[in-house]
Image (cartoon, rainbow over all chains, first blue to last red; front, side):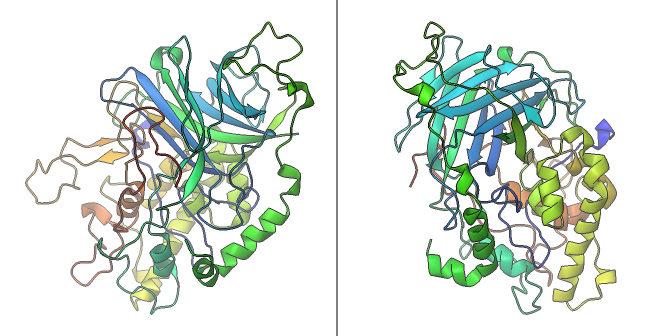
Length: 230
Length: 235
């Protein structure tokens, strides 16, 4: 793929008439949806303008609909934040998170033992660990300036999912005007919760990157995976 | 959220979810006997030889996410969605771009019927970034979320209306895009604009007899914190 074409991103919304789904990644596929390994969402951002830190937020599971797995991190599920620093779309670094006995243990950022679909925990590269919170956030800050959190949080995703389904309904009489005006639209995720894993770390721990986005801005290419113990 | 309302509106989803839940019995959290008696000191302690948690084993990828909404919107069926979740980014363009492009056109066919038009007459048009369907889906198929270490984060910020055309969405030199995703970024509206907005970003914006397809009308409702961990307590 040409770098100059890497300009944008993002489709959030449309789907074929018969498929029901919830963006951003909530409940996105038959094999993962509703399980303890279901990724709900992923954010990566600078915490404040000019900061030398980067924040990663990974949301797992959701209570936006009934009967979904929600509320407990699965000890058989390894969450991995993948970071590509040379633009080949292969992870050069990973940050791992896995729960044990009420705590979330973090490893990396470090070169994975192997790239691709199979992972092992980088036990010789511990980053730190934090008690899994209940309703009140318990955070941990390590000596090297890394902040860690794991526990339930409000789901910050916002989307009028009900109206969206009306829009994509093939019935010609369904939502002929499309989405609703702001005073009538409703955020389906208002009131929903998710299990968040949040890591804030100095960019120095991620090192330099030669990857650039379509506008020529230096970036890390990132993605998140969940991985189940075999 | 009221269960009956959801059940009524989304019976299909509920049924599928119920099936998924029924198949989930082997996914219950496991307690590790090795953890018994572990000291709760806030950090792993290498001195506690033999009492550290057991992290052994091999873990296989089961779910994947880069940019928001890519798999859920552009993968046409359950098989493709499942395949996307066990794919790796370096192979995604070759594997998924053609399916994504077909899907993009399919959405327009569905909506053409709503407009009482011939599906052949309502097609995707190049968006505000000038990307045609093939190019857009190529970009999106490489499903990674860029984050810039040295530039303010935004999924897309059109900036000011520097060219004075009364439309800040048209490119005029001060756009910032692809530098990450904040908790506040309205990725749905950005995505809708890229999908249905056409070159001016307003092709289907509810005006001039068109349906509103470029904004879902909602904004952030969750509590966002100024300090770590940035997202509010559960409700």
